[in-house]
Length: 450
Image (tube, rainbow, N blue to C red; front, side):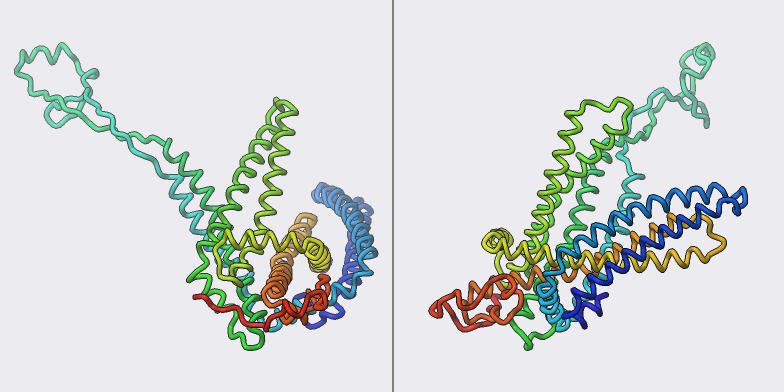
């Protein structure tokens, strides 16, 4: 899929639209055929496998219905978007030109995934240690005596026997320390652990976004003379921009954790025998939606702020303000590029999922030892969509970074900027003749302030 996007950028729109139509129709037809096969083979199944056959039939009936609905929606979207083929082709031609010059960017999702795995493994170890930890308390126990080499509780002794010693007893009293554990402090540590999990994960993803934005902006302003944009971006990230990434990821955490808490409360309320008031459930749902929207907005703003940081070498707050201003001033162009670009990338994910699901289903049906293959088919489709999302989302980040570079180049260099030669500027509606020549300036590399 990545090779197709890179090598056939001009035809990628038609290819995607045709492939997604064929793959969705073929996948839906295969699901209905599988359901028809299972329905007509009940009489040939042994009694031991009859329950598995019924489960397969029910699962594939639902799969077929859902796939039919999705196929109809996709075909309608393809029909509506067919007039934007030239836009889509030009959009991905520009992105492919950037990625062709910086092939190391394709490694970023893999590196980020490995770092996330290591971080989650470390976090799991900390959680296990925390689950077995307690804070010891030491209350004194004084009801003990020593009789020779024997330690006995006073209440268990025969008191009249002790009194017969008439004060000449060799019994000696002493105190023991009984170690008890108070788990209260551990409960507060679980919240810290949750915050570290969310913040750490967002920080790692933010570092990936900063690396991609830095590499794209370095390539854009340096052109063919750019040497190792990815290594350059990683170096600048480690030396100067870790604080900005930490601040951006912390803002996401501020909105994500309350959303998770509200989601948990809503789930607990729905699971109770007494469902509670509908007003409370509606309030929780509204809160979840609000925090979700805020989280998505901050996440999108962060990515654009990282691009401004790599271009102008400024702090996070100033970059976020400038990124927001740029997005608002170019709202129509941003909406067009994002909607059309996201649509074609979604088609790419659907193609990968459909083709992988078809191949997986055909292979599973050939396995005579496997009688219930509905769940493995679903797992294959989910994993294939997730992998396609991780890889193809790289194009989305590159497109956003390139468009922001175009806007900043136009603001800094006017009519003489490199932005006039980019298709993103042309498709976004920016034309060089809209600006006076007196506003133009010679295109200059962004000065390295560090």
